[in-house]
Image (cartoon, rainbow, N blue to C red):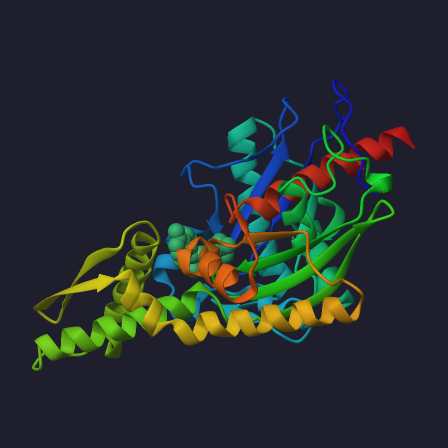
Length: 377
Ligand code: AMP
């Protein structure tokens, strides 16, 4: 049950909201003004790559520094650990130590806790941690375990689309409709770095429930980067037939994929850009337009459309003839092609607002409500 916060009624323990994501994670809390705020650490970045570099037996680095090493030192870099949650057999072995998925995840959580401590002067002790709607009991238990290893009281494990919807104001009492009379359905289109999820959720009789879920957990922004990197390497090789293909070398391919991602980000704002590729003593300047990017990645986007359609079909079978709102979540939903596709093909009018922070913010809103309810009841 989600109720509106009472003005001036602050919970004793700040329950933080944590988006423990496949590619990026974030931590938030509800501030004194009643709004959720994302807490950044020393780096100033609102999100932390969910990547751990095991630099030595007792030494590890979490975040951007680890992400940059991913292709250079794959034996010591653990990425995408979320895909292993719930797999009791899986271990990441580095410097002779075997790490379970909750253990690796706890390092990411500890890094977020430290960031929150840096931002507020007080390290969080309790949190709501989000998980994909399709996570089963094993994965949810593994998530709680990760929180426990990080010395967190995990107040609740909350579905990501519900958190995202809360941050977009779904089910809010202040100034909004009376929850007891409200029935609203929302489609959450979540395209992150490594996963895609489409979910239809419903708010009815003061309860929020997940009606339909579809997704591809091997599809995300990284696939766009790979596609662009391939295009850049072909152009580089065409211009420099005697030079080595950058994709044949770990440092070259790491640099190329990072350059591809930068170009992709630029093309969400600009119509065209240029990428300079240097490798093996040679150089190529590759112009790239948004149209070209969209053309070379069209099958990827089409797959998200097909899955969204199946999700809507499933919701229709459960009695939802049409959705009231469409929310875009995940950094990759910033690509203009996403909203255009949903408008053109499904005649939907999506909302986009800080898509990579929505889940953490919603978890913080949920955490605050839970804590208030614990105090009242
Ligand atoms: P998330 O997992 O939600 O943090 O999303 C991460 C993914 O979003 C990465 O693949 C990023 O490259 C991608 N991303 C972030 N910002 C943008 C943008 N402005 N345009 C396109 N993709 C983006």
